[in-house]
Amino acid sequence: MKIAFLAPFYPYRGGIAQSSTALYKALESLAEVKAFNFSLQYPSLLFPGSSQFENAKDSNLKIDSVRCLNSINPLSYFTTANKIQGFQPDLLLTRYWMPFFAPSLGLVSKLVRKKGARVISITDNIIPHEHRMGDQVLTSFFLKQNDGFVTLSEAVKRDLLQFRPNAKVLFHPHPLYSHFGKKQEKAQARKLLQLPKERKIILFFGLIRAYKGLDTLLEAFGKLDASYHLLVAGEAYEDMEKYQALIAQNPNRDRVQMHNHYIAESEVPNYFSAADVCVLPYKTATQSGVTAISFHFDLPVIVTDVGGLKQMVGEFEGGGVVPPENPDQLAKRIQEYFHHNQQEQYSQAIQKNKKTYSWEHLAVELIRFSEGQAR
Image 1 (cartoon, helix red, strand yellow):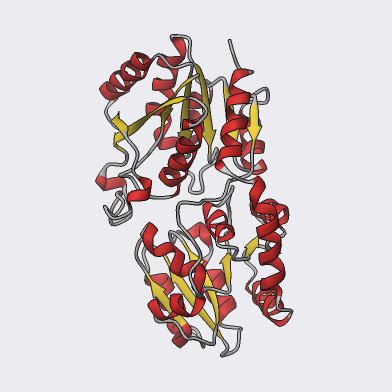
Image 2 (cartoon, one colour; image 1 turned 30 degrees about the horizontal axis):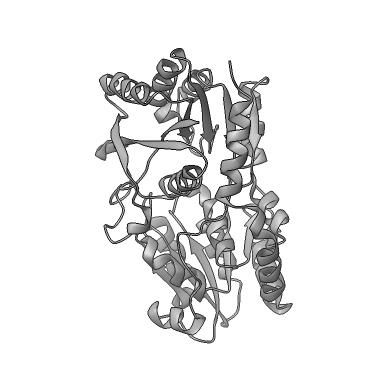
């Protein structure tokens, strides 16, 4: 089988590019795969972060790809389709995560599909976290160009079936990452990050956006005693003034440590090795790559009951679940986690269960699914 995989890859950074690379490498052993990449993903004016690109030192993510799709240049939609057709794929695999990309990915899919290739999209989100006018029209256009879909959470599958009730969908839990390397020794990781040796370290990791509920976690942290320390690691995609004000008002403000920048791949092991628990206080969600990273390092999580977070935690028996936007319940669950020494129990369960959730397993299931979508 020949597979054309159209998605963000290196040098683009972030969870979509990292997970696309992991899947690409898993597919390589099963099929002839060629990666097609963006030449321009987001215009600079629309990108809220400091950079769209990985650190050049993060070489684990490098694969050969054809950089051809400019998300805002319709001419490139046709040239990209031509390049893909030149490869003569049996399957075009795309990655869809927000309506902004519906015109580019949708038209390329439509053109390639007309030439006889099957088209399947891995849909990370159907309903975006931040809603904008026209989202439904754009999403509907994109979905019509596909023969089937892969979702990494049941929540996204439900959203997709609301748009297309008869859609053919493969659900596979979000695989765990392996390219981040091994867990580090805790004391050394804390030393590198200048964290206190004896405190209970709570980690909030990833891009800071309104829907991720950092404000809820800060309020909950203010209810904890002096034995706790909060480490917030990630680049802000919104104004930080709100959070700075919350920290200034927090009775535990001296024990809040902010690393407000994008965390390079090579630095990730230190954060998850230094922490005692990773907290995802999200207000809305589908699935989360942060949970997959945390479980890779055998680090338990405490998540809110939104989207597919509860499902993933339950499958791994890897942590606790609380209602969203409830600082009292979150603080109470954090205290219970440490009072009952649950880290070892949850870590052992994660180790036992995570072998099932590999990119290799997803690759096998995806190919089997695609073979059933012949037109």
